[in-house]
Image 1 (cartoon, rainbow, N blue to C red):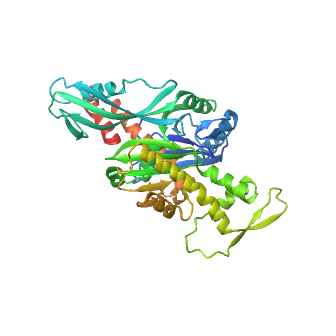
Image 2: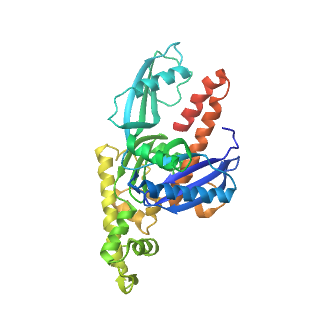
Image 3: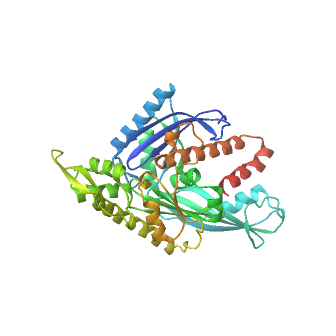
Length: 406
């Protein structure tokens, strides 16, 4: 793929579909945004397609709008994959070092050895991420090429997906006349767009609170070490508001976005908002305190599930960098303070760190599509290297791979 060839990514989520079309360049961001579009979508539930027709309509709508903006025809796309069906499996591999000095061929062999494990039925590997290499018992090696030794070990993390869920998502995109170049786990993409290198190095837990799921990503020494998911997120908060206030779901979503907050303990009360009834013919006054209690209860449940997940995998002591929260459903006043109380650690709300001219896109809602772009750019560099000469390719392809994943 030539360096200037545009890239198109699709973020197909539980509540919306986002399309971004960019041209790689030498700017601080690494690309020029040529066009982008957003469309509400109800074709997915917790990252899994449940309505093909609605998903196809949403994808067609955003692609058509971006094509109109850019006056071009889009054919190839890279898509994000998330949901409760995305999981992680750790594995180790061991090989002998052929010429007593680690070469790229040895790295390829040890990675293949680590991947040679039995996976659950109906599972597809989406990413293979190295965590560390071990040369003759010396652990913590990140870039072993050129090191002397006789035995090379690799510890890897494989991100996998339910094959049927992946196939159905790809099918929806292909039904729009598009070709899927690559599938990218959104957990990996979001970690690229919002986390600093220092956080990824020290150890941090990233929570991406979307519409249908809350994705959990733990990074340490610049590598992903854990991926998990909680089947509770923004849609559940909206539904709680609708039930508690007897208001339509669309009104509940507006209330959440406009007035949603988690009150501090010193709140004195007395504030009210006007809420439409289910019939939309009457309205009622509801206290901000009641709204806050409804919202807080659901986010407490989310954080309780996250804490349990971290404890089950013995990760609570691996995140001295604390908790980083992002995603469209994370924009609730007081959320970071609540998380700080529950996790008893440093918490920050994160937006993408991409240097864009359009500041409206520097928003937690766009963390995934911007992360997909960063991931796609890295993959483009890897593909460019793969087209180089044989000698150059043998040396450089793993250099790119290691620089990216480690």
